[in-house]
Image (cartoon, rainbow, N blue to C red; front, side, top):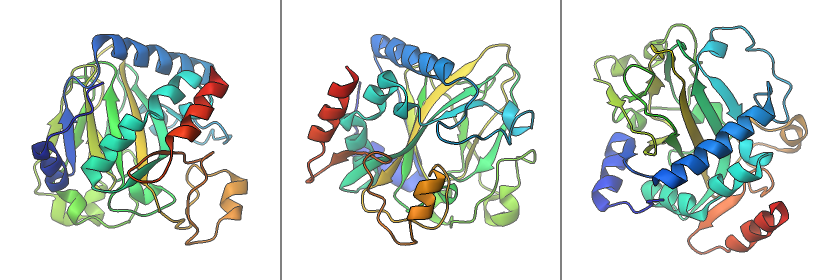
Length: 280
C-alpha cells in the first residue's frame, strides 16, 4: 500500500478539497480488498447498518443509487484489518494537518448496473460532529469511469461550505439552491483505475454519475474523524442508546465506536493489536 504523499499532493488537497492517489494498492492488495469487501457485504445481507433496522430506503430512488453497507469493520474481521490500519490514519492526518484520526464510519458503495446518479452533497453535515478537517478515503475496487459512475468534485467548495445538509435525492442539483455561488464552478471528474484512491474533505461538494453500463462499480470508503471532535446533536450512525447518552459538546472518544487508528503522540497501536489478536 503506497501511503507516501508529497508536499505537492498535500497542497493540492488543501487547496482543492480532494486529491487522487494512483496505484494506491498493489494488484495483490487489491484482490485482498475485493475479497474482504465482497465477503462482508454478502454476509451483511440486506442490512444497511449493523445496529439499525433501516428499511426506509427500500425500493426508493436512493436504493437504486448504490448498494450501501455501513461500518463493515464492526462485523468483518477482514475489513477491520484493512480499515483500522494505522497507515491510513497517518496518511489522512498528514493531508488534513491534524495530530490524530479516528474512524467515523466505513461504507461499501457499490453502483449496480444502470444505477442512478449520486446527487451533489456534503458529507460532514450528515455526521454527529462538525469539523473542517474531516475527510474520507474512496478506494476504487473496479475501474471508476465516466461511463460507470466515477466521482465528481467542485474544487474549492470546501472553503465556503457550512453545515447545511442537502439530502441526496432525485434532483441532483438541489445543492445549488443552498449554495448558488457554486453554480458556475466547473466540476472535476475523478476517473480511477482499480486500486487507486481519492481523499476528499468532508465539506467539499461531490457526487457521482449514473452507471450507464451492465457492470458493477465497487468502491470501499471510510470517513476519518480528527481526534478531539465533539457531539453536535445529530444521531447519524450512533445507536439509540449512544445517542441518548451524549450531550452536545461531549467528546467522541469511544474506541468501540470510533477507534483511534493513528496519533502523532498518543498511544494507539497497542489497542489495535489487541483487537486484531481477538479476531485471529
